[in-house]
Image 1 (tube, rainbow, N blue to C red):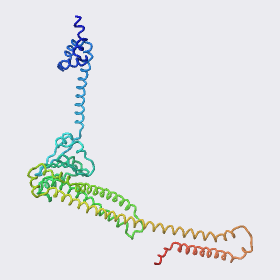
Image 2: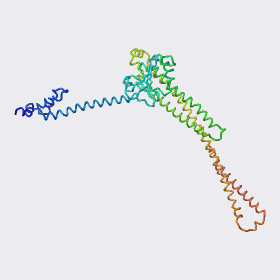
Image 3: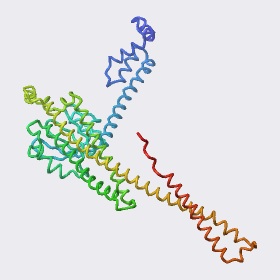
Image 4: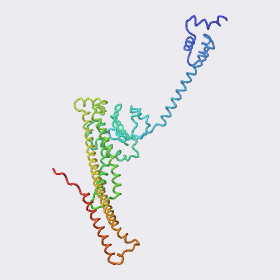
Length: 408
């Protein structure tokens, strides 16, 4: 019995190992599913009290790991439940249309994308991720693959007519697209760019007649005064034109950014890297990157034409505003000159009116007895006031005359 009692002290010395190491070895020899038995065996080797201290934290650690796993599973389930749901409209190469709803997490996992790739904002951009083209055109959100086109969340955007009547025929080759002989992604990109250019053109065609009509009414010389309601309409149309110019500028910058990078042009050719036959054709003579560059340059030129038309309208508005300001300044100058003339007349009349004030005082003189003195003094007052006013007006005219140009 004494030998057994001294065994916990002699065993570490004999094996030249500390007690903690021996206890850990004893725990490793046992199964994880039976921690109580492991603690008992370790207690028989190195003492019950020491083994109990070592086995207790190990059991707590295992329980903590299980608790963390359960917490992470619950958090993932919670995030998946609150993930946004996209209304997806799918168009294949033959123009067939299918609509379905799918969560954001499931969608980007199926497409091989990341969550930030489907974080659409009201900006214009064209990016390539994992052989997928992601196009953002403000409210229009699309993902292009070599086999299909996905339009996300089209509802409440007045896109039904274009989506279900025009786009399927364009993708199947029945529409007016110049990229029909090329792979599917060319037709999809051209259809989306064509829609956006037509949208910008429609906004400009609505604003242009309204602005021209308002400017004609404001600059018309028959109207001596400026209509404030017309100015308000011009202000609103000017704001809409500024927004349109911003949209066109962003569209041009997005396309120009791709045109400046040859690698981006190569990445936009999805079928070139996924279909061996297309890759062989591209290597044989049909350069798809060059075709993509020509396509983007064509729509960049169309956007540039829209930008020039919007700039011309802006110049007309600025010129008309200058004319309106000149007319307003002219009217203001006329009113100021009239006010100055009346002030001079009042000053002249007040100056010679002092004679009447003098005779109106209760002072006696021999002049009151002659009736002709009244008419004489009155005539002198009016004649003197008129002469002074005339002199002041001539002085004002000389001061307001435009100076002659210097002799060369």
